[in-house]
Image (spheres, rainbow, N blue to C red):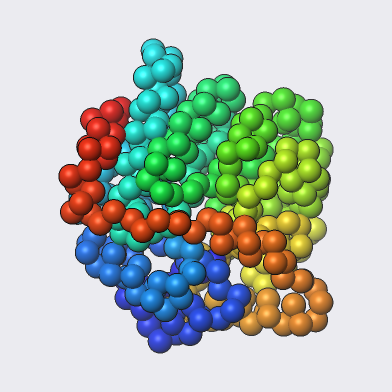
Length: 346
């Protein structure tokens, strides 16, 4: 999963989109000059590659890429957790409303998937998670996340729970450091991992954390077959797609005492059990050379037997694509379901 440098497609962007190993594209705020041009960009992407999975980090609160020209500014998830403390049933209804509005507005622009909900617990230790988390209690997180996921489903959009097995207890920010969580597997399974087990029949996407849990595995979770295959797939029964977090983050660049190039990181993540790997914000670096190096490097790695493409992974990616066309923006504004959801936002 790649990105593009700006709000319009270049010849190099089109070439990369046509590469057989390109499965998705992630959008950022820089890609939205206004809603009409964002919609046109997504349509152009789909014309170039009809099965492309177009995604965005659009959670609400401080992680919401599009905030103007009609997009509803959504609350941080902690507000739903606070509402739960006053009225639990009203909080679940509000969470469904958030998911409905979030999903419907993105789908009206042609976007397929948002990387939400955050399933991390609010331990009060992680500034990078902070109010992105619903609550400290894994039971509350599970029920609010499931309600938000229901709203996304009503809008025709899938979801991606993150950051498995939990980023909320690690104090460092994996964008700029390698976070470490020294709790035991028993402690993690009894607390932070609980939402993933309770949502095992509902989750369609999961993103692992660039966090090291040394009492479980010396490798960060996104590079750990123990976490992704033994625990997430086998013990918890997860059947959906696993996305790596951004491989350009500092937490992803270090493994087994060495610094990884993006291709090495991608091979390690795929071999550990990821179905898709993300490389973000590299398309404007040196003419996009890191992106080309990743695509070419993965192609060579497959030819050399260092990584084998998995048809099951491709099937999981395909299942994330919406099955129904979106409601265009002007029609969405008159939709009774959407308007009711707007009224129920916290």
